Amino acid sequence: MAKKIMLKQDDVNLYRKISSNYDQDRFNAFALTIQETQLRELLGDALYKLLINDCDVNGVPQSQPYINLVNGIDYTYEGNTIEYYGLKPFLAYHWLKESVREGDLYHSDYGNIVFSDNPQDNMTKLSGKDRDRISAAYMTFVTSYRNNIVQYLNENDNLFPTWEGKDENKPKTQFNIITV
Image (tube, rainbow, N blue to C red; front, side, top):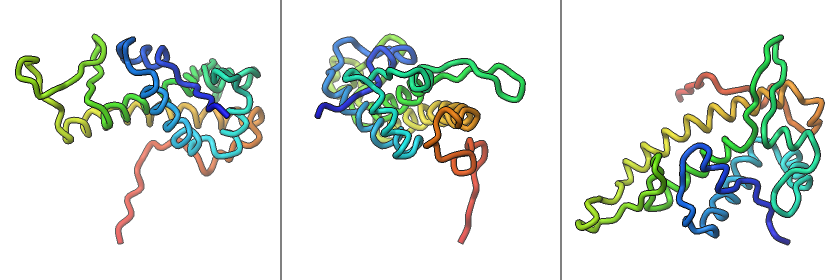
């Protein structure tokens, strides 16, 4: 059975331009891994399975609650209208984070730049430390979008009965430091 991949290259291009020549198989491999690990962990197994089952073969949800979950919607929270951005930015920034760590690419506003050690290119390959720094910067966006998802699901848990809930998945606004 073919895997349903929700994240498309156009979704990532909304946040950082990547070349239209980017290898589609490589893109899909990163996208599927992120979907099956990070998204599944966030939503929980039951809600993730329901979401994937609701998607067509192209990874597009078919029923309105899942369309809103993936693409975003405005909703009311404590009397205020809140913009829920959807799952796509969470997935896109995870994709960017992983592709920086795993590939020889840097995602600039002008598109992908391939770093090489060829002196004629006037570039040097990114060090592991630089990759970690860029990846950490993308992770701040991932965390922000994750909090937006959790808040939306907590406020709309009646639409998603398998959502495991308010206590286990509170938005992370602080770190707990445990010493032994």
